Image 1: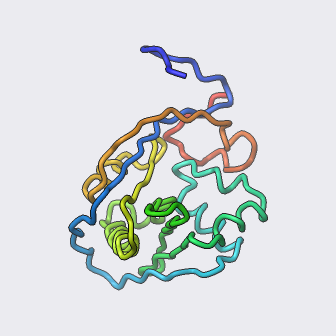
Image 2 (image 1 turned 120 degrees about the vertical axis):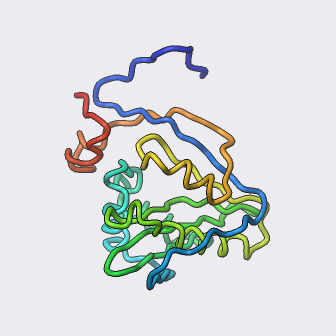
Image 3 (image 1 turned 60 degrees about the horizontal axis):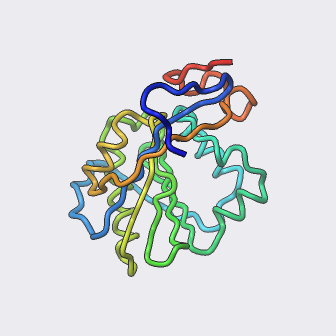
Length: 196
């Protein structure tokens, strides 16, 4: 469906975001890592409570809700699937999440990528991005891709572009507001007003 030019109403109780898909088709030059005692640890067979907690702490402010709505079996099927790799960033007691999906032959999707609030704006995200790109391009790939949306940090698209991605597709995503059904607290994502 093609939306007409101009404004389109979004029903009360729903949220709408512009989603930007970005990709790279060749290994980029990596940016300098930030100073610090960084670690990136692969988490084999992630415990569901651990994953949910880190996913919430990294993504709640940006309305990451799709995984929060999954039951345990659905979540385990995805994050423990062969070809899906989950990594935890650590530095000075702060954390980040990196999830790579290699299930599509010749491709890697950067499914989840983010750091906790205390690390935003510090340059910390360059370290896990560099490791993500090293991990991805160490395989026989033709493409690495990611998507982000207007609920995310305002600098997300620019960060991905500085990392070597280029935008190739834009979509509108409409969903039930996760703050109205208790998936996320009503205080999440104050930059996105609740309309009941």
